[in-house]
Figure 1 (cartoon, rainbow, N blue to C red):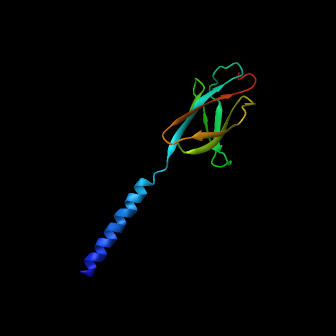
Figure 2 (cartoon, helix red, strand yellow):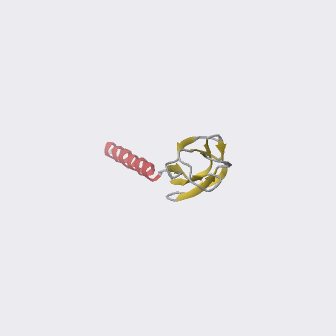
Figure 3 (cartoon, rainbow, N blue to C red):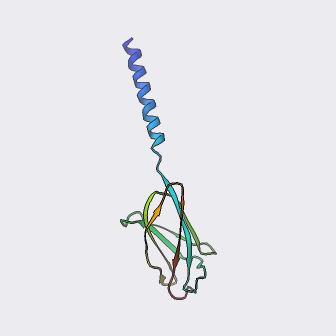
Length: 115
């Protein structure tokens, strides 16, 4: 009987661990936007860099032909980002919030001509 009780206890414990792991999914969101030049025109192939607000975990991508970018499935939290193209750098957009299951939009403006 003790062996059955011990086996049942181990089975229940395993189920609890699996259930806890399934419910511990990381909350993620999306940060999307557009890079524009000083005249407000979209900048294709600009490099957009994103990092946590404490300066860790940098990621970069290029904008599409319409100056758009999209960082998907980022852990909810605060991020800093900026863009660069042809020697022009945008200001850092600081503490942009990424929220669970939401898309946060931002526009980054490059000074000077992007051409």
